[in-house]
Image 1 (cartoon, helix red, strand yellow):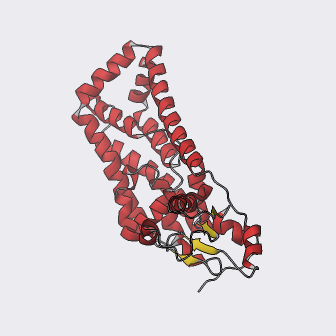
Image 2 (cartoon, rainbow, N blue to C red; image 1 turned 135 degrees about the vertical axis):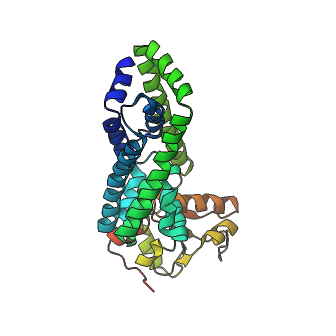
Image 3 (cartoon, rainbow, N blue to C red; image 1 turned 120 degrees about the vertical axis):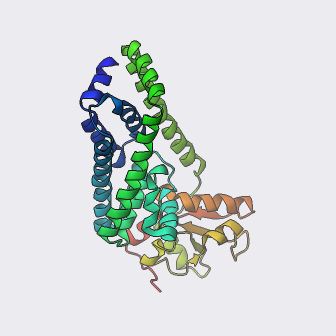
Length: 308
C-alpha cells in the first residue's frame, strides 16, 4: 500500500488525469475518491490546488467531448449503446433526455454528481446539436464544480484522510487488497442491481415482424409509444398513440382490458415499454407485450414510420 501512496505522491497529477479520463469514458472506476485523496495531499507540496483542478477538468473535458462528438456523428443510437454497457439502470437514456430537454446545457453543471448521467448527457448534447462552444463552457464549469468539491473536501479533512492512508499503508499488501475488495464490491453491487432490474422486466414480447402482420388484420392492436418528445422526432409506428410522462403515471389507455396492446420505446432491454406493460397488467390488462428492439428494430426491418 505504501508503494501505491508513493505513486500518488510522485505521479499525482498523471494518476488523477488517467483516473478521471477513464471514469468519464464510462469505466466503473470512481475518480472522486482519488480527487479527495490528492486534495488531502496538497499540503505536501508536490503539486498545487489550481493545477490539480485544471488537470481534472481537462481530463473530464476530453472524455466528455469524445462522447459529444460520438453523439453528433451517430445520433441517439450512441446513447442506447452507452446504457447497454453501463452498470447503471437501463432507463438512463429516458431520464437523461428528460433532464436535458428541460434544463438544456445548464444541466451539465450537475451532470457528474448524478450517476450514469454525464456520458449520456454529453452524447445527447451532440445528438441534438448543442453548439460546441456552449457545450464546452457548461461542461467545463460542471467538471470544475465536481472535481473542485472533491479537492475541497480532501483538503478540508486532510488530517482524517491522512490517518486513513497511514492505516492502509501500515497494512501493507492487505491494504491494497482492502481497496481492491471495496472496488470489487462496488462493481458487483452495480452489476447485481442491473441484473435484478432486467430480471424484473422479463415478460413475453412481440417481434416487429409479428406486429407488422397484426397491423394487416382487420382488428389491429393498440400501439403505444412511450418515448420522450425528443426521440419521437424521428417518426413513429403508424397508428401509435403517444403517451406523455403524465399519461403514463395516470395509465390512460383508451382500450378495453382484453384488447391487444403493444408498447414500444427506444431504450435497452425495452425498459420503459416493459415498465408500462407491468403497470397495465396490474390494472387488469391481460394482453400487453413490449416490442422487441423497439422503434430501432422496426426501422431496421424496413417498415414504414409516420413522421407527421
